[in-house]
Image 1 (tube, helix red, strand yellow):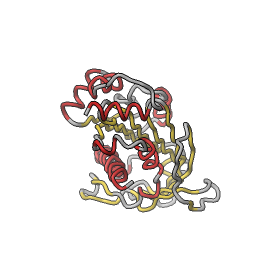
Image 2 (cartoon, rainbow, N blue to C red):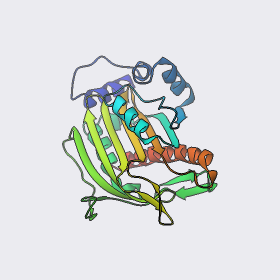
Image 3 (cartoon, rainbow, N blue to C red):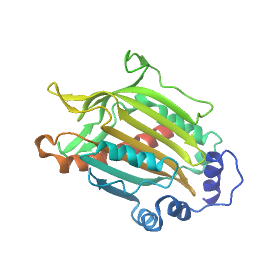
Length: 261
């Protein structure tokens, strides 16, 4: 498995020659020794935060401070983090196009439609996104196809339309980065969300962040989701549980798309 890890690292780092890096040493570098040990022992990490707190699991990576500042600017009523390891098969990791497949999986925005999660407030499995697709601009909102890339850009911006079963409809700005440390995807609403015609979430107050970072023979999947909204019906506790389940659903979506790509 160490050879697979070296393959992943080499692919992400553009073919540089590296010493083999174990999952534990990579995770300690990304998460710190304590969190790395907890992740390896438990299989996953979870953390929650609010307007008075800050993300506790953000990996050591370029842009870390920016993500933290963006979350602080939101002042979320609900915020969660979720981290676990994605372990590809040997044949998948040795594929020269493995990193491009990961990137194009995140770019397959329309495949978010129909994914399910366990809604703690409803007490049952529910559709997360009723609709999801890329649009040409926030103004025109014409649906366009998901892009696919042969060469991965360092930075890319897109806009998408989302119809969430719990939060409602909104247009989102989606940012992608790829560098010598991994791949990230950031989703931020640029339109308000309304409940019975009353705005309950302002632009910039729904944020989802995903990072795919090499960790030895695996890939660290880190997810963050937060929102600032009125506490309708006093559901903050169930919303926190549901937000964990949203990130778990996004991890399952990523894994399923990687298998299908």
